[in-house]
Image (cartoon, rainbow over all chains, first blue to last red):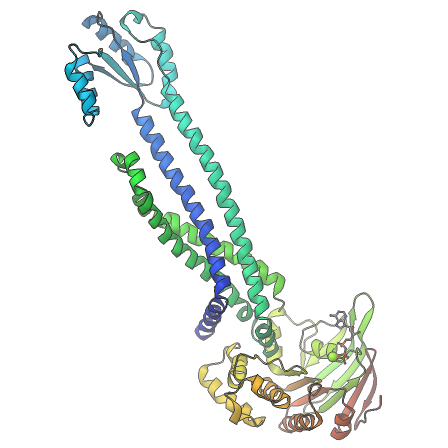
Length: 304
Length: 226
Ligand SMILES: Nc1ncnc2c1ncn2[C@@H]1O[C@H](COP(=O)(O)OP(=O)(O)OP(=O)(O)O)[C@@H](O)[C@H]1O
Ligand SMILES: [Mg+2]
C-alpha cells in the first residue's frame, strides 16, 4: 500500500518536472489568484482598522462664547449628559484647547511662532461630546440645536461625523467589490488552467496510460498521479504566495505605517495573527478546488 | 478457458461487429482467429479484456463470468490475460528492462519481485542480453518479443495476440510464432488474430473464421481459406 502510494507520488513528481513550463504557468496563475485574494483580505483589514480609528476619533465640538457663565455651562453640560446615547461630555477651557493645538503642531515651527506672537488666546471654551455609536450623532445634533442654550454657543452648524465614516465605508465597499471581482476572475482562470494542464498532461501520457490499462493497473493508480500533481500545484502555489505576501507587506509597510502605525496596526502582524485561518483556509480551498477541476479533466479525458 | 455464448456487439446505429458468436476454447489450446478486415476480430479481443461490453450474450473467462464485470474488477481480469498488438505499445523513453518493470510497478509489485521476474520473462523471449537498450534500438521482431515478455509478467492464463506479426517480415514473423507456440507449450492458452495465410498454414492448429461478425467456420486443424 505504502509502496503503491510512493510510486504514485513519484509518477506525479515526474509529470511535474517533465512538463516544467506547463507546471510553471499553472502555478503562476494559481499564485495570481491567491495573491489577489490576499490583497483583498489586506484591503479589508486596513479599511476595517481605518473605520474603527475614525469611529474612535469623531466627536461633536460645541464652541462656547465668552459670555457664558460657569453656572450656565454647568447646566448645559448636565443637559448634554442626559441626552440618550451620549457616551461622554468633556469640557475644555480655551487654555486647554490652545495647549492641545500647540501639542498637535509641535513639529511645525511656523505655527508655534505664530502662536507665540498672539496677544490673546484665539480659541474658545469648548465642549466635546462623544456618542455611543456613529449612528447616534445625527440625533444628538438635533437635540443640541433644539435646546434652550443657543445663546451659549458660537457655532451652529455641526458636521455629522457619520458622513465621514460612511464615506470611508462606501469607498472600502467599492474597493472590496472590485477586489472580489478580480479575485473571483483570477480564481476561475486558475481553475481553467489547472483543468487544461491536467488535460494536456493526460494527453502527453497517453502511451503510458494505455500500457497501464493493458497490464492491469488499478484505476486509482492510473488516476492518482494526476490528482497528486494538481495538489502539488496548489501546495507550491500557496507556499510561494505566502512568501510573496510577506514581501508585499515589507514593501507597503512604510506607507501604511505613516497612516496606522500609531494605532498598533501592520499587515504583517495582522497576517501573523491570522496565519492559520487565512493561509490554512486558502490551502484547503486551493487543494479542494484543484482536485475538483483536475477530477473533471480526468473524468472527461481519461477513459479507463 | 474462454466461453462465448451468443455474443453480439452492436456499434450504433447498425454495425454488428460481432453477431451471435458461440465459441469454446479449452485450457492450453492454441487458436487462430482469421477473417477479413472489419469482421470483428479486434472487437473480440476488446470484449475479452473488458475494453468493450457485449450488447448481448455471456462471456466466461477462466470460469469467471465477466459479462457484467464491475469497474474495479477489470484490472484483476487484465492481469490474467496478456495482450500484444501489431504496434508493440512499448514506451520509447524507457529501456527494455524498464518497460517490463513498469508493468509490474503500476500493479504494486515489490522491487525485489520485479528484479526477479523481469529477467525471467526476458529469458523466455531470448532478450536478456538487450535489457538496457531502448525500443528504438531493437528490430521489429525484437520489440514484439519485448511486448510478449511484458504480457507474461503476471503469468497470465491466456495470451491474446492481435495481429502481432502485422508489421514484421517473414523471418521475424516465424520467430514470433515459434515463441507463441513455446509459450503455449509452457501452459498458456493462446488466441492469435492474424491475416497471415502462411502463419495459419504453418501452425496446423485450430482455426476460427469470422465473417461480418459471424463465426462461419471452426476447424480442428485449419487452413487459411479466404
Ligand atoms: N468504436 C467503434 N465504433 C463504431 N464502430 C466500430 C468501432 N470499433 C469497430 N467498429 C466497427 O466494427 C467492425 C469490426 O471492427 P474490428 O476492429 O473488430 O475489425 P477487425 O476484424 O479487427 O478488422 P482488421 O482486420 O482490419 O483489424 C468494423 O465494421 C468497424 O468499423
Ligand atoms: Mg483489428
